[in-house]
Length: 119
Image (cartoon, rainbow, N blue to C red; front, top):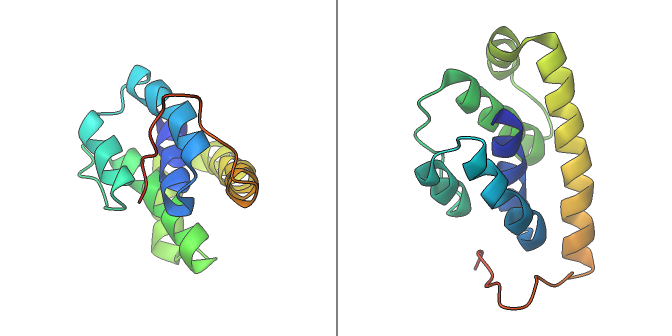
């Protein structure tokens, strides 16, 4: 669930349609509430019921937008998801940043019949 939140948050920041489309159903299948997905799609901080999910969202948004993590965000996330979880999260952020940049730069199309989600 946490990795899907990270991917959708990143796809939303980049307005990367293809990874958003590819991971939206996976997020639902992994228990991410539809209201969280919609908030992410609208570039709003979701009302997370899980502190770890909020921490993951904040790590993604701070690292991508500010290019640095505040000590508070780092230590909060570290305490909630652990060292291995942080390493995995940073890897996901790096990988999906590359994916988002690639699909955006080359304007890769969505499958036929799929509508864009970002304005």
